[in-house]
Each structure stands twice: as C-alpha cells, then as structure tokens.
Image 1 (cartoon, rainbow, N blue to C red):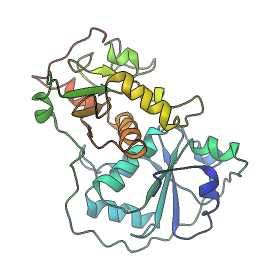
Image 2: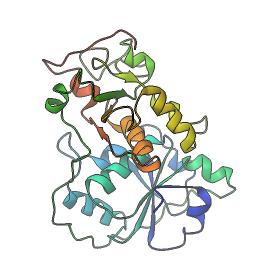
Image 3: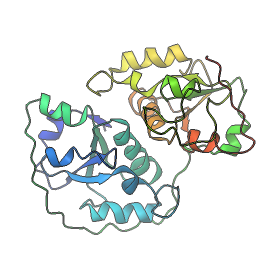
Image 4: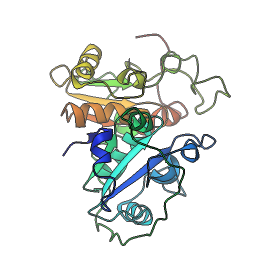
Length: 283
C-alpha cells in the first residue's frame, strides 16, 4: 500500500465514496481552501485535526475515531491528506495511521499544486459532509514511534543515536526560535540539542513542495549519517513536531527504515525546560 500518492491516482478514485479527502490548513489566517480546493475535500486547521482540544497531546484512538467519523470517514475509508505545506499532511499520516491505527491513510505528494499541474480542476463548492459511525478501536494509542524528553536526555551523546534537527538553519544555529520575521517566540532559549545534525525539512522537498525521489532522499539522509548502516537509531525533532514528521515519513514509509522516532515535544519543550542542555555552535 503506497503511503505517497500522485494526483492521477487520486483523480481515479475521487468519486469513490470510500475515498475521503482532507485539506489540512497550515496557518489559522491563511485560507487557501476558499479560493479553490480539490472537489469533495474537507477543510480542517491542523491543530484542530490532530491535537487533543484541552492539552498539548495527540488524539487518542477514541478521539481519532470521533474526528474521522465527523469528517465522513469510517474504519474502511481511504483517508487522503494534502496541505499547502507537505509536512502537515505527513503529520496527519503519523497521527492517524501510526499512533491511532486507521488502516488506509495516504499523502498527496505536492498537494493542491500537484493536482492543478496534472490538469485536474479545483472547486469553491464546500461539500456537505454526513458523519458516519466509527466505532472506537478499543486500544491505547501506539506511541512506539514517539520518544519523550526523559528518555532522550539519556541518549544525548550516545554514539549509537543520531539526533536529526529538521528546523530551518537559523533556528538550529540559535538565531531565532520561530522561523520568519514575526515575533520570535515559542521557547525560552535558542539553539539545538547537543550533537544534533541539521537536516532542514524543506531540503526533502523541491520548489513545488513535492517530496524528492527516493534516491535523492536517501542521499540526503546518508550525508547526515542517518542510514541504518550508519547509526542504530534516529530521533527527529523540530519546533512543534510536524516538520520532524516529514523526516520520519520519508525514512520510514518511503525508504523502509524503521530505526527512527519522533521527539514531538521538540524545541518548544526542550528549549523551555529546566535541565535540558543546549548548544548553539554549527555542526
């Protein structure tokens, strides 16, 4: 089952009621959806789609079932995610498939741009969505691909662990906590986890926000020392977790490497917590 699909694959299945398409909004004040979206696509801001509404934690299987059912997706539906920024779709893949066990989740490579470049139309019509039953799975969330701060503290400096920082270079080098030119907030300190290697998430994408071919991806990861024959384990992090999910998705789902986990607390937690070591020098 291909985790990453192209526009023609989706177009061939768009009329199938088992296919549920969701456009993931990546900024609360940027609404690309209203200007035109893939026909039938639902529209949800990423934090509302993936996070517990009361705490900084991911949905449980019961919550995920309620969210998906509300979007018209049942347990047997094919959930196709796309976004104006690819990492918000891979974040959803990780949350719904890996953590919460929805069987069939796909990411549209290149998002809306790939859809229009392939000659497929957009629409401004908002679909009428009928909620469907989605019985809770009756199991706990599968957190095996997550790593928590306390465990990570014990791996800093471990020769068998590669820490992979997926943020922009200015964040990694300690020039900013939050990318861009706006208010610089999101953590108390600047820098990166000691020993971490910089591999900006957008280096995995071309200028159309399309994931690069597997051969190019492998070359990038090998240059960082992240291949299974180079290190026993990889921990990917960023600022909030969604950029790290793109690194995880490329390694795990596209290259078949299963030695990677996500530190989803990322710099927001690490850079603000007493007792977390940091460094700022380049590496």
